[in-house]
Image (tube, rainbow, N blue to C red; front, top):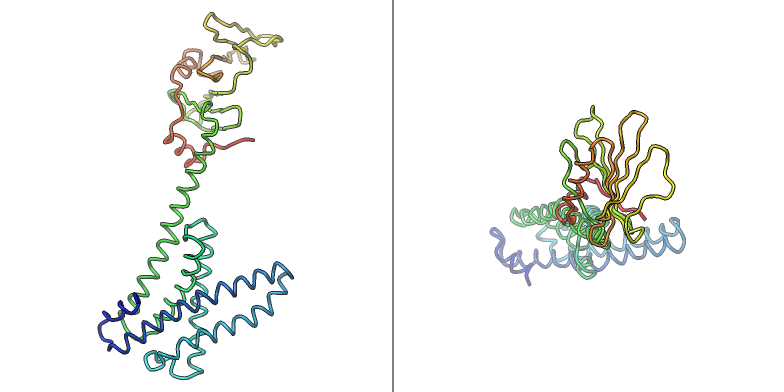
Length: 319
């Protein structure tokens, strides 16, 4: 009914020709929406049951039968579409429409494989016939019918090539955010130290670690932040300490450990409790004041910050 209503508005066509054209395109759509999924299912089942060699008989039988059914839909328009005037012409027309439409179906399958949303099973079956109806429309000798076909084709390309993938990527990113939020009590960031940038983050089931590196590549600058489930009731110095390592826990329960380096520098590590987590920061270039600032500016990782890390591929999950 919708196809016929649209055809009634096409200039340059008589009422009878408009009706025939609408019926023709509708038959192509319905016929191929029914036949192509059956053919595809048959090929898949043959390959599954007997390997690639078993698909040859199904292909050799199914394709000519499908082309023959398609040619039958052109019978009502043999006086409207020049290529459908005789049986050989209709078979040639059907072969052309089948090839062009199948290319469109394959493009749709590729888009669906790329996680583009094409609706439920019934919608996808109905969409299977659209590329064949669009291909058939290009053979109708009427400018407005062809303009409509171009419009549908362009809409499909825009959605399948741009809008759909963008939506799929957004859904994937949102799903990743949900997975990272499984241990939200560990997801904390500190204010990025001056002259540094967040270079890498890793989220695990019991810890969240962040590395900060210098913006300038010719100057070494590094700091690490680790948020984890508490290892002990309160931070405590290790019982066995290496030579050149000093450690102390102050009255507030914050641990400070300093390790002497061969270069004469010192690597400083601070550990303190933050809510239900234990936070450790360490650096040999930032210094104790910078590390304390990193601890003092701890804040929950926001959705915007997490999405930015995902977009820049600076965060990953560990088992």
